[in-house]
Length: 442
Image (tube, rainbow, N blue to C red; front, side):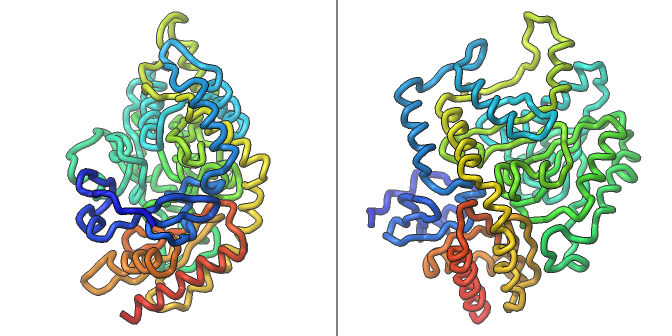
């Protein structure tokens, strides 16, 4: 047990600060599938930290790579300079990416990755002489980080309402969640692919397709409650974008690096976008890092339409391709391949699915949806107290059941590290079952 620190000075992100500080939930160390709480308890990590620790906590190979790099080269700029690991990390990521996506722009997290992808999309059309394409289309209930670009194309009201107008020329597709038709789906829902047609029938008809630069979607909408795309939905979006010369961007910050049993959701769905935004699992979350993986043709367009001695894209960050982040990324990508974690996730996902759907008959459980090693459990709200039911279960899980879950509204989201085994899956869902039942009894 460690002494609790003074909590007054830190303004915590996405947190009810006063509520948290009245009874802080503190994590002091981690290893493999488990956190150690500040009061000395071992807590099973059912969320891979924050959808990001795919290879488990404190993996020795990743830790060693960071330590060695910190003692060798702590920082080097990538504005008009570089260091070898930046190129090595980009090449390794490109090798893992879908065919045709082999140019990499590094940033520091998913929010920066989304803003980077949106800027590349807008600049690409200008560079090729089509500056009339300025519109960006996102989706309702989408989470694309917290940059002004991300909250504009995102579809979460709470992320937008305090900050006024973000970007002009943005519109949104409807989200594909339909519990009335698809409740308790195992894997891809049967109904709802026609919602992709709204892109063409309504949004492009309204705005004129020649004004639309890009469409950005999460293959799985994670932060708003695990919304799984219906069968053929993403392929329809791809076809419409191709038809009208619109770039398709996949935000794979959550689905990248094995969550669905493949390197990217693009591989799983066999739908190749023009750009992929990734982060989180890129370094196994050991050092902050994000990236945009870009179609070769987009990169070539910038190179071919700019003077050889001129900057082609006026964009970047001080810490783009930071040496420690590159070392962590190279080590993490090696671990994924050497330990065959993507294949492992694919194999154990069937067991995970079965365990999740055993909760179907519990009181207050309204829907369960899953794909790969991610599932959402939607609960019926308490009358007049929306979101409180899931939060009560979250608290009970942490303090009494020794498992870490994540909630959004009245939805429980689970996304464990890819190293989880069957006994740990049993423990996770058994403890969660007890917490749901106990909370329902009041």
